[in-house]
Image 1 (cartoon, rainbow, N blue to C red):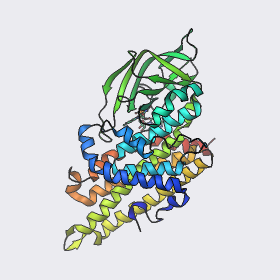
Image 2 (image 1 turned 135 degrees about the vertical axis):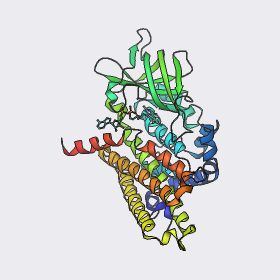
Image 3 (image 1 turned 90 degrees about the horizontal axis):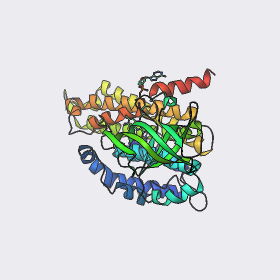
Image 4 (image 1 turned 90 degrees about the vertical axis):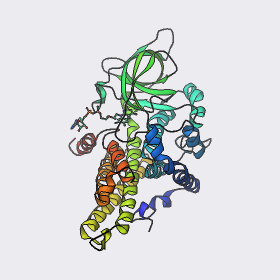
Amino acid sequence: MNRLNGYSGNSIYHNLNPEETTFIERVQEFAECEVLPNTREWEENKSFPDNIWTKLAEIGLLNMSIPDSNGEHVSCKAYVEACRILAQNDPALAMNVAAINALCITHIIHLATPEQKDKYLDAISKGKIKLAWALTEPDAGSDARRVSTRATFIEDKPGYVHLNGEKMFITNGGKADLIIVIARVNDKELSAFLMETNQPGFEIVERIHTIGVQASNTVRFKLTNALAWHTPCTFEQAISFLGKGRLGIAAMALGIAEKAFQLTVEYSKSREQFNRKLCDMQSVQNMIADSAVDLESARLLLYKGAELYDKKEDVTMAAAMAKLYASETANRCTNRAIQVHGGRGMTFKHLVEKLWRDAKLTEIGEGCSEIQRLIISKQFCK
Ligand SMILES: Cc1cc2nc3c(=O)[nH]c(=O)nc-3n(C[C@H](O)[C@H](O)[C@H](O)COP(=O)(O)OP(=O)(O)OC[C@H]3O[C@@H](n4cnc5c(N)ncnc54)[C@H](O)[C@@H]3O)c2cc1C
C-alpha cells in the first residue's frame, strides 16, 4: 500500500484517461525532483524562482483548464490530483496552481469574449502572462458582496472601465501581469474585469507576509482610475468558479495532511523511548489511526466533488464539504505530526512544522470554515 495514497490506494488513477495519467506522472516527477528539494529555500526567499511559471507551463499545469482543439481539457479529477501532489511537496505552489487554474483561467475560458481569449490565452498557457484573482478587500472578506471597488464604464471606449478601490490578500498579486478584479458597477451589481498591471493606476501598497505559504506573493494593492476590460458576467457567475477553487484547496489540504502523515509514521518507527519504538505505543497508534481515518474521509469527499464537477453537476455543497473536512484534517494531522515528533517537531529541521503553518491557510482562503458550514447548512435549511 502506498501510504501517501491511503487505504483505498491510488483510486483516482482508475478514473483518469491515459493522457491524464501521463500528465500526473509528469507532475509527480517534477514535484519530487524540482519542488520538494527547494521548498525550504523558496520559503526563506519568500518567493518562487522567476522561471517557475514557464516550468509549470512545460509540465502542463497552466493549460490543464484550457480546452484543446477538440474541446477536451484535463478533468477536474486530474486537476485535484495535480494540486494534491504539488501540496505534498510545496503547499504554497499548490495554492497558486489551484487558484490560478480554477479562478483565473476557468473564468477566462467561460466568461471572456473571443477577443479577450485571443489576446491572452496562448500567452497564459505558456506562462508568459501571470495571473491573479482579486475579490477580497480590507472591508470585504467573508462578506464578499461588500466589495466597494468601483467600475465606471468609459463612454468612448465600449467594454472598458476605470477601477478605483483597494484589494487585499491577493495571491500572486505582486507578480501578476493580468488580474481578474471583481468590482461594483452600481449600488446593486458586481462584475469582473481583466486588468493589466503595467499601468500607473495599479499600485502595490504592501507585500503581506503570512505565517504559512510564505513563498506565495500575497499583496494589497490600490487602483486609481486603472483601465480594465469587462468580462460580461454577473457576480454569481464570477464567483461560481469558487466551486472548483475549493476542490483545489481541499486537494491542497489533503496533500499537506498526507505528507504530515507519512512523516509521522516514518518518525514513529525510528524513534525509541522506554525501550520501545513510538509506533509501538498505543497513544501514538491512536494518533496514527485517527489521521488515517481523517485522510481517507477527506479523500473520498474530494473525489466525490471532483467526479460531480466532471459530470457538470452543481458542486456547491460537495466542494464546501470537501474543503471544510480536508482543511480541518490538514490542521489535525499536522498538529498530531508535531506531537509525535516531540520537541524536534517544533524545529526547522523537520518539515512537519512548515506543514502545520501551511495548513492554516486552507481553513481561511476561498472562504473560511464558518462560511463552508453556512453553505452546507443552507442546503438543508432552505
Ligand atoms: C494567504 C492568503 C491568500 C489569499 N488569496 C486570495 C486571493 O488570491 N484572492 C482573494 O480575493 N482573496 C484571497 N484571500 C482572502 C481570503 O479569501 C479571505 O481572507 C477569507 O475569505 C476571509 O476573509 P477575511 O480575512 O476578511 O476574514 P473575515 O471575513 O473578517 O472573517 C474573520 C473570521 O470571522 C468569522 N466569520 C466571518 N463571517 C462569518 C459568518 N458569516 N459566520 C460565522 N463566522 C464568520 C470566521 O471565523 C472568520 O475566519 C487570501 C487570504 C490569505 C490569508
